Length: 242
Image 1 (cartoon, rainbow, N blue to C red):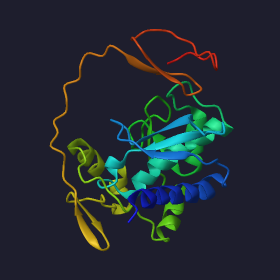
Image 2 (cartoon, one colour):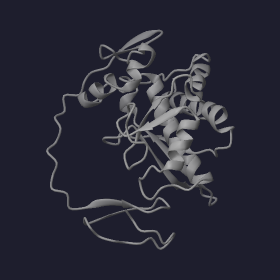
Image 3 (cartoon, one colour):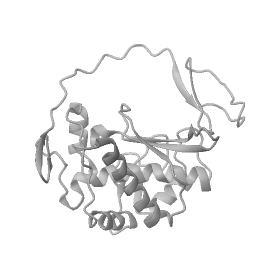
């Protein structure tokens, strides 16, 4: 049993399938990571990793805490959402900082995902925090169906997801799409040959301390942390950190 190999093989299989079906196979490879980043299902970071030979590659991070408590289609939405950011970085014009601009939104719609600030119909299509939902009969859903016919699955689940993640997963828009239940409807994840108990973490949320530093990002993906309200420019791209 090689859990790391199995998990990343499944992620690469999904990436390659969506790259071919939705982007004509034009996206370059990237480094997919699993990150328990708070308040996010995933993120994209351009040119984040460097090879010893000098080559650079982008990062797409997926939050594994959602694997056991959301429909697999929503995990795929997160992956493809970040793949569109990767597409825009290489072939388009990304918005400043975290801003999801119209070009990004148009590409999302083209491949079958509707951008929405609420994750539901009627939300804003542009902004700093934009979720999405699958468009009925769109390319994304068709690509998902094709992937599922290959007996695709995520074999490993986080057994101790935070209670807030369980609630958000079971109330997600994808849970109501074609009546698809969460992967852990009774906080229990099932595999074909075994039953894996998924327990809700009883960790109490910490009281946030007074923020003394903020994260700023420039257009080339470099991050810095500084006091709120500061104005700084990047020496690499001459863009302002936001």
